[in-house]
Amino acid sequence: NAGVTQTPKFQVLKTGQSMTLQCAQDMNHEYMSWYRQDPGMGLRLIHYSVGAGITDQGEVPNGYNVSRSTTEDFPLRLLSAAPSQTSVYFCASSYRGQGAETQYFGPGTRLLVL
Amino acid sequence: AQSVSQHNHHVILSEAASLELGCNYSYGGTVNLFWYVQYPGQHLQLLLKYFSGDPLVKGIKGFEAEFIKSKFSFNLRKPSVQWSDTAEYFCAVNAGNNRKLIWGLGTSLAVNP
Image (cartoon, rainbow over the protein chains, first blue to last red):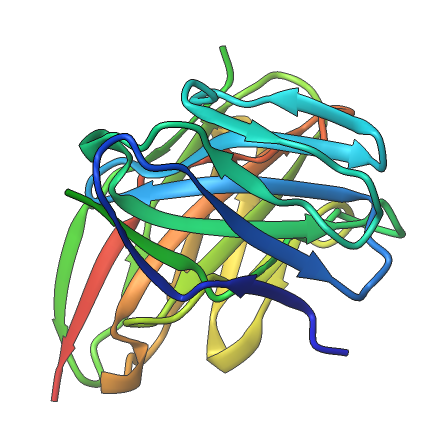
């Protein structure tokens, strides 16, 4: 299993540009989520999905869209990039099995918005 | 609202020193508790977790944590740290049937050789 993969690893955008951060997992996990990580602010949940076709907002959803057409993929779209969206973005997936649900993280995407 | 508090934001230790990182949460019901570690330039990895049973949980790399329900705490410990333990450590809580994790702000640990 490749686990959770994210592309690209690094991206530089100009203010106003749009882009899609890709996330895929091959573990058949139904739950997927996007976080952003900023210094001193820990991890903040942007959007999450409990299964294909179902998405919901986290604590910082503004400026981001998601869709979940398949179990495997959960792309994050930046509609019109702003410098405040400069961050490291992590995708995670998990399943509700025995015991506590454990989230598996991707390697992250470092985004710089100029 | 549910929250997770990590008391130490930055910790600096010498090799072989003992480590204890504090984590408290605010939720009165059933919880699942996690510690994740993020080594420099890497993604988050699960260190250990508690969901039921023995409140003393052992994780990877010699780490352990103790769930004290009466204190709403889940402190992380290691008897003797190594330089390779330099990383950021995050406590997280999954409360009730909510699948979302509530995260602490993290503790940055630097171990001097």
